[in-house]
Structure formats: structure tokens, C-alpha cells
Length: 197
Length: 101
Image (cartoon, rainbow over all chains, first blue to last red; front, side):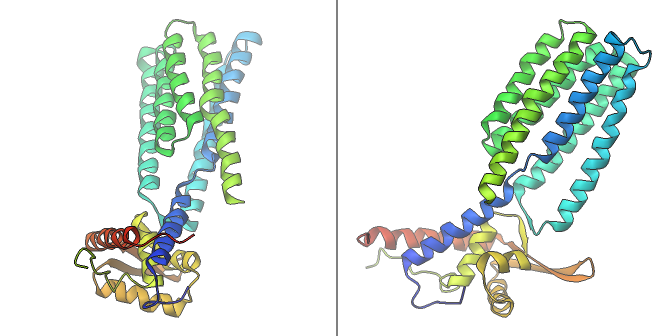
């Protein structure tokens, strides 16, 4: 691009504006990585907890939740790597980072309450509802329907979770990750690749 | 022809308009990003960024990232207003002219 000035027509100006705004718009696309990372980890952990505790009757089935450490390490590593490579900051990316951090804190608070005060059976529906808040809001922001539907499905599953036993809650948690993280995550990944080609 | 607003000469330039159009949708962008998206040479882009900065349309911050110099650009409120006024003026011109096929 040169510094053409006097001969720049109005239509050429209009074309530059449109092209550049479109270029910048592509910066806020999500590749679905974090949905897939956490989706698989929570799916494996909740099904693992169910199988270990209620099929194999292992005395410490909750040990599978140590997998979440892999999620935390993976997330910190990826966030650092991406922010080092990031050459443009958008308002949406800053909002998303703060928003997901706030959701993470709310999840930790709920887990503390579940572990030390109200019991995990009371905490799980709240966790599922929080997943719904996160995915629904992200989906609305990106206008990505699978996330919006996944988020809304979480809220229905959260209500159901209040009325079932803990082992069934574990299965509901697995279903939650499937509908709100994994399916939208793979669809995001596919549309991200499609857009970048 | 008094209905036509004059086009801001600072923005009525291919590269400066491209830079402002990129910055309008983001919080801030690095020099290398602007260079890649506009396809301009580093020297030319540098000169045009300085012109936008002198006009008060953008803020430029220079620092270091992994031991390399880093230049970050951010549109100012004045820049946003100028861009909006430019787009508005452009619309009056385009609507007044018969569309080409």
C-alpha cells in the first residue's frame, strides 16, 4: 500500500475502510482450544469418578479430579504463549479474559463451599449453572449459536441436577461438558479453520 | 455544492485511512500487525503513523518485547471523531454520485 492521496476516489476510500475493518474483525475469532481442553478433562474426570466410585467401588474416586491441574497448567501455558504472540489487542479479548477468570474464581468458591460446607451434591448444580453462564455469554458475544444452545442446555441440566443423586449428577456433568464445551468447541475449531483457509 | 463536507486531508490518504480503519475496531495494535495488514513498507508506514500521531488521531507507545523494540498504536477519541466525520462525509459523496457497475 502506498500513500496515494489526491487521486483517491470516494469508492476507493470506502473499499479500504471495509477491507481493513474486516481484517481487524478476524482477530476476535476463537479456535475452540480452551473449550476442548476443559471439555475433555471434565468429561473424563466426571465419568472416571462415576466408574471408579459406583462401578468399581474404589474408596477414593475423587482422585480423578486431579486432572484439573493439567487444565490449569495447560491454560496458563497457552495464555502466556498466545499473549506473547498477540500483536493486536481487542476489547472483546480483554473482556473475555476477565470474564472467564471471574467464572473460574466463582467455580473455585463453589468447590470450596461444596467441599467444606454444603457438600458436593449441593454444589454441582451451581457449577453446571456457572458453565451455562460462561458459554451462553461467550456464544452471545461471538454470535455463535452452538455455544448459546449449549449454555441454555446447561441451565436446564442444572435444574435437573438439584433433584437427582450425586452419581447421576456426575453423569449430568459429563453431559454438560459434551453439550456446552465439546460440541461447540469442535464446531468453533472447524469454523476457525474454515475462516483461516 | 455546500451539502458536501470536505474530506479530512489527514485521513484522505490510502495508508493513513487503512491504519485508522484497522485501529477503529481494536484496542491497540503493534506496528508489525499494521505493516502486515496494510502491506506497506516499514519506512512509509512509520512516516504515516507519525502524521496521524501529530494530528492527535492516534497514540504511539514505544517499548521492548523479548529484547526487540515494540511500537504500539491506539486510536484516540479525536481519531474516532475524525474517522466518523470522514465516513459521514464520504457517504454524502457516494450517495450523490451515480453508482458505477
